[in-house]
Image 1 (tube, one colour):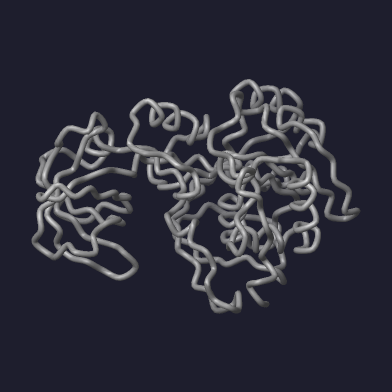
Image 2: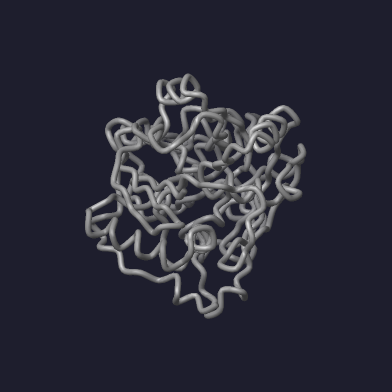
Length: 349
């Protein structure tokens, strides 16, 4: 399949730069993939399109404050993204502005108030902009990130190192059910849920199950290959315990729909599903869901609106039919929906 088939034009003003004032007040486009019908609604009314017994599967990963700022000894400004902790208090990071840096150079990491926090030595420059740093502090990674870190917003959301804006993003670029630290990007389809809405849905007979998939920086990587099959998708770590597998299997055995919230939940479920049932599992997934894929357990899906030529658009196109998705996106553009991470939502039934 040609990657160009995943392309569409989005007016830049429709890229949401901030969250909706109330999470569940975001708009909701409901797409019926059997009839091609489209309904415009609000996320707070999502229960109108669900049935008692339906099982929503949520990703409870928690986003780390992984974006940080640093300076060279000579004063030049750097921006980094924490990717992973390595042995001996070393960090794997993405580092902007590192072109002229060499192994052995010393950087100064800045805290959220822009004061010097600690030194870090550049140990190694690797492929794809990755760098290995050795931090010169006794503090553990979580403590350091809490002191220096900003929410790792995607590059199409424009933010500088303003602590006040970071405080808002720290709350809103995180689901209300986030529990397990490890992501460097949010599972954004879940940002629309509030605790009262979850309780309302439970009272209406909707069941909830949780998986954990730690979203990596690769989720923003565009497909640059001319043919979709030539793209190497990123690996991400996941886990699902026995109790949540039981909740899903019970719902499925009763004929209820399994509805993952977001592409991360979908990818995890489809990785571990053995036909219409699943088992507890832990591992990493490199599953690339694209048009032609046969879904094993997903019956409906809650998602956001995705970038052109992205693996996420390929996934929803595989589920609903790419022509249906692009028609729905065109409708959303005409109706001035807000797109991408802080944007509006879509329910595909």
